[in-house]
Length: 116
Image 1 (cartoon, rainbow, N blue to C red):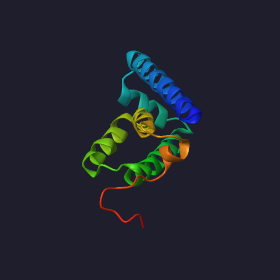
Image 2: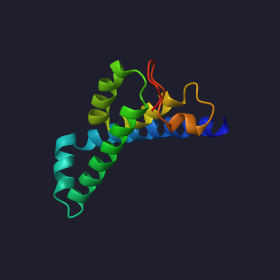
Image 3: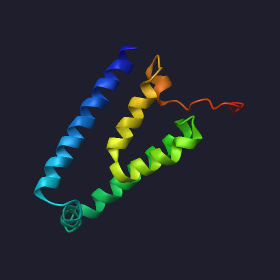
């Protein structure tokens, strides 16, 4: 249970940090202008590819982990719009009722599924 509590604290702190950082960055430069500036850097395309690869892996995990199929599209849209803020929110949701970290990250049983 201590691992689950630690994960909640870390995920919550990271959500706050990402939101604060995003608001500050938006105050200095708009999102699209910032993305254009990053894309123009030599490491920009590699950075975007890395982000896309990570978000795709998280999307697959969400599809496997989310027991309520009806809300899965909302998580995926959130992931596309908010990136790792949505990832961390999903991690927090997965900690609800979890007794250990394995339960947080393992595939959730769906009603009516045979488990295999």
